[in-house]
Length: 278
Length: 76
Image 1 (cartoon, chains in turn green, red):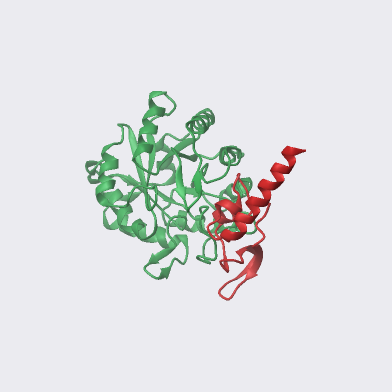
Image 2 (image 1 turned 45 degrees about the vertical axis):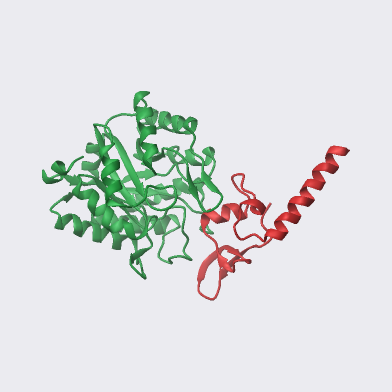
């Protein structure tokens, strides 16, 4: 988790977030929504070096439907070799819906754990109370699911420290630092450096940034010894005015950048070992 | 309750899909999955107060009629 770590021949964990819960095909027709579509694109990304897939589920109309996450997991397992499955427990829905991400059979390797609320649009607040966070963390630990600690702004890092003080997390702590608009952390290199400097010992960090910030800030993350998440959940354009053709297009670019930086991409097995996933 | 301006369509001038998708007849565009939750009053959303495109005048009328209904219930 440092520039020195980057220099010392380390592996970068590349996560693909193919779908998300924000956009629909009307914004980019290449966005995968149905289980088979998602699995097909994830398999292509695994071939290019992605070792984790962050998954959401949709219904036949393209609307969010946590009840279909099992179908998505099954399709991905059918299509992929060994990719680490990370289900969402986020979004604007109720706790009962969100918790379905960690109640699949088999359980996912990982699940996102939003460390607090944030705003969407004019009226939507994603409700992530401390009580809900504690319950999700406890259930994940009981089932051996590695939490991906999603920090949408600086204050959410405080909340991780709160969980660590309660001995609710196991090392290494895997952060996902989120940069973007609204109540996300403002997307600047200076803020990336600031957040990384505030992380506890025994941490690994991943970085996601929305839209045009995805390319420069994920590249910065690799230089700082961090990991990267790319995909159409966070970014629907390959470059200005050019819609993304597939998730693989974004993963391929990131893989090429890692190669230029003389960093290796972690395999799924290496990712499990590094994050302590059994 | 579902928003009266929500429609499910397979196409508009710019898009054609395999399945019906949520379409706002006020904004005249397909809506995002997040917005569709508001259109359908899911997760304790209320389209009259939480939607950015719902006509203000109609929202006021519906809230007023709702208040009158509540007052009528209370007086019974």
